[in-house]
Amino acid sequence: MSDLAARLLRQQLSDLVPYESARRLGGDGEIWLNANENPYSHSYELDDSRFGRYPEFQPPELIDRYAAYAGVSNQQLLATRGADEGIELLIRTFCEPQQDKVIICPPTYGMYAISARTNLVDVVNVPLDDDYQVDVDGVLNNISANMDSVKLVFVCSPNNPTGHDMQPAKLRQLLEALKDQALVVVDEAYIEFSAQPSVLSWLSEFPNLVVLRTLSKAFALAGIRCGFTLANEAVIQQLAKVIAPYPVPEPVAQVAIQALSDDNLKAVAAEVAGLNALRAEFAATMQELTDVFPSSGNYVLFRVPNALACMKAMADAGIILRNQSKQLTLQNCIRVTIGTEQEMARTTSALQAYFKEAM
Image (cartoon, rainbow, N blue to C red):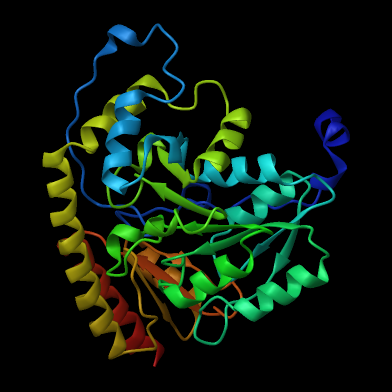
């Protein structure tokens, strides 16, 4: 086998470990609760008459509908290939390679660090505190220590994988302290499942606030890869310089526009309420067996006696979950996406059997 690719590879990427997405990890099961996907699906119609043409850079109807849904102006919004592209764009736009840094707050979503490292931007880890809240003093001390080279601070709320909402007072303190220094990126991929209001209403106060959103979770559209970056117009204008020419494929735009219709928004709200009820029921059952993290996402994280043994037992039962043991402070922690009522009943039964055997 030729070693050409290995010889041509950028030296800085030789030791990079790719993000272990649910699909890359794979597995063999009938119930898939490892990717924080919504278990429901809706029907959409496609008009293929425009498929031979390049799509709009930012499809106007899509922008109109999501701006109305989010309560922002059209100029404060950029549609992207999932929220992941928003992460990448922010780093490519605002961070000088081999010079600037980003701060992340582990345990948290792994793509912040991977996107930074693939763009030769250093990552500074400021772990969440004992309550799994952002350590504001720790962030600010690290920014001071790095002599203003930190351009972005990523905070996930609700946090993936723990499920915690970040306290608004801490987010506000961070934004205020960094108002003239760095962008604070609040990833709200799971905001629809949370009782805590979005920080989007703060955009007029904070020029350094950026919010990431997606249709992958509450809208049950992980397969179309459609997300949004929301910020003040000045930030959006800079991101628009860097994004690819046609970031939203025509079929994606058509489906997303239909998903943001009034009727579908009502259906999504009903599904979210149902999933939250199942989340509460599942968490209460698991609390009788083990330590459970409070969750405002469509998933529940809990500790098990042995994560590898638990994963195997569940896989043997045809159920695929997510082992989070590699994350900081989350040794022997398993994350379960909330599925249908039938999926949760079967998963609960299998976990109860595992704990009975393990204990």
